[in-house]
Image (tube, rainbow, N blue to C red; front, top):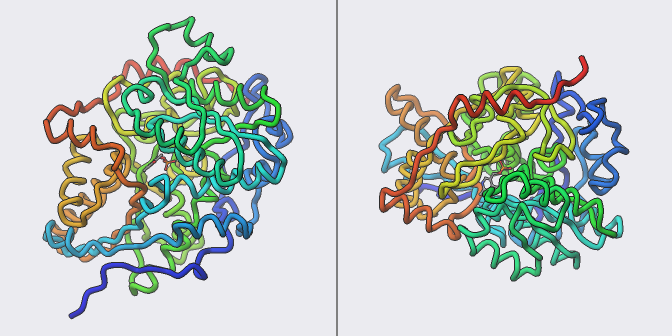
Length: 455
Ligand SMILES: *Cc1c(COP(=O)(O)O)cnc(C)c1O
């Protein structure tokens, strides 16, 4: 029997519309609240922060939204992305499961993140913006925006979490190669940064802090606005090209997934793959479809945080969203680690979890690398440490099939390559990679500082 290893679409098959899950949710997440007054936010409150076209998408309840042709043209540099059947890995695991993965490592920046960076730059340019300010943790989002701003002839200012700035120089160099201006955060360039440094001069930084700085920079610099790489509706919307392509590819393969898996920092790559399939669960066509969002034990917002309103950033300047959170003051442990270190989670994912449509689980990083190693040794791809969380969940589901003898169809999103993360693989191979679990006390203290929203 001839086996097929990959399912490749042509440029003409690139989706021309994004899928907006809000249209099909019985109970969409509640509206954002204003960071200072905690009253419900009006869309126009966001005008200083985001391009207006994106604010409209954030609030949209339309099921499908056109992808502008100029955006499609850029996406075609690497899309449609391939979908693979992991025959060799299945054999190595000796599992009856059928494992598929969507490979997002083919973009110039090496992950799914350019899918939204390109769209955001298009709308920013349309509005006449000169540049975007943003935050980045491990540097993947900053790289994606640096690449995309360059294509649209825009400027890019990146606040990079201090510890990553020093631990992970290669992403910074990539951003600078594309022409971005990168500073460690907290920095002395913003009021928020100066205040945070005053409170703790030795702080190693966090995404929450870097977001505060980037928002401030974006709203106070002429011709600039702020760009965000995950969490909010419009970012997840832009990422649905992943799942829309995967639907076509699974059809080519003659299979439909029983289990969908994505790693989740803010939730954008997982939602991007899962939402176009989740549509079938929401409308009752596929009631048994399982969707698994995988996070890190070091930042367990979905599995150990609470579902409540919280600020999206440390300085409390961004919108307040109802989400699973470990608190906006969260500071990741200063160990060499993969990403997935945002204190909150995309509000639509949290609503789906809360309503029982999806599952969440958390893993320590060493077991993720264990699985990523077996994956690399069969499939060849060395995945990003974040992606390794999805690989681990796929591994566990495949092993569960081995126990029961079931031949379930598993599809996971391989969100990015690990070519810039080899230091983490090195630490893992030398058995020098720490596992870190957030302490219960730390979570409890953080949760005392949540906003007291009016009923
Ligand atoms: C940024 C990133 C993630 C986590 O972000 P999400 O918004 O949750 O997708 C996962 N994988 C890779 C490769 C990333 O770069």
